[in-house]
Length: 243
Image (cartoon, rainbow, N blue to C red; front, side, top):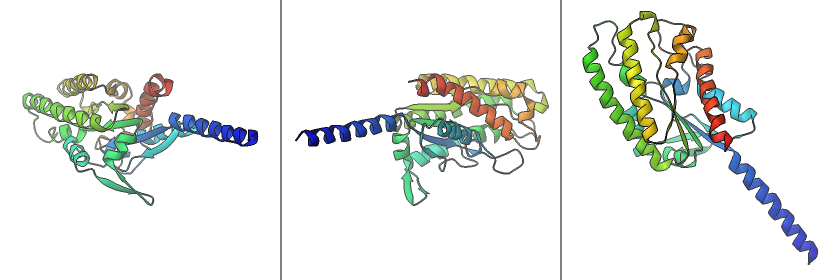
């Protein structure tokens, strides 16, 4: 009888240790547009910020799952809202994963969205109506708030929103700088109000113009993506990974 009790206690202890270790692992979901999927400055896929975060967690033996299959080039805020409401499905290996279920399971969600919305309104070949652009940003902010509220219905853990950088630094245009500063201030406020972490990258890119090597493309270099991931990892080490 004693042997049975000892064996049972050993099995129970091993199972508890397994559960504790499993609970410390991070289910990481990367959502958003071409920045989330890692499109490079010259039209090819490169190592994006989410892959660097994924690699960091893996090297620390903290990664349970990494999913970036829901991120898509050209995505707008309303596209992601529709995907969540429609409970979009993707095939990962031999398994089918739904977006709502991935949000429920996620310990960490990174989100870069909205660039396609705003850049659609800044056509450098024609004069920009900055007054209407500010009004558009206000509408876009309402879409972001709707998205974050929707995500919060499913994800109760850490959501990280990546801010904007000015993709046209070579223009040296204060009006464009002011637009992106306004946009970032709105997004930061909405993030705070919805218990979402906000990562500011505009200053980072302004101080490192080499992160945008192609004047004909708005996407960062690999170094730019790595710098974004560094800001995310720094945040995680103070929050999720410090708990």
